[in-house]
Length: 258
Image 1 (cartoon, one colour):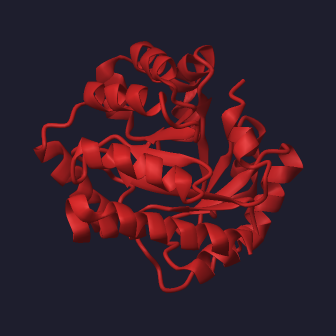
Image 2 (cartoon, rainbow, N blue to C red):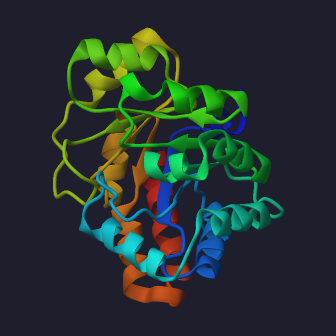
């Protein structure tokens, strides 16, 4: 059982930033992890770029294209994580697509991810009904295979919650990732259904960009996840993005803990 992820939720509400590995380059990605940990990130999601990221809006799609055009491979990212683990203890979770893991070899991918010090994996395009092959391989290596729940049927949320591992990723709105001006989903009901099945942390993502939204979502759950707003900063400032992302993470962390 992975311990770093539960511990991340043990000190109050968690803030979980996402970045795309290799955008603008891997050296910057590595620096971002160190600085986001210092700024208070509780868990960091690392996106492995993929040519057809179906759950992502245009901001993260473009980051995937930039990273892939740099020639970034899964092995490059695993080597980077190995370096990161010599300096940083923050829990790290890969977010990528089934095809990336499948083409690498499911068992081989899980084994290498565990060896370099990853804590978990999110595959947004793998439905609950088709997760077994990935889940079994992740379990064997002590990686949390993290489930997503969307505002759909109560029965489905309960089924997913019963088998969830690490934390539950609550999707705040249907559709793709990207910032939203307003989040109207009844997060509290989703979280309550999960907790009735299992005492597991629930973090909310998709659409959060402002400290006010992060605070609002954290008030109804165990934490907030932000991707597109951070990836936008990386796109705007390129290799100079690190201090800007660090400041953003610091402000968001303060908001979720307020």
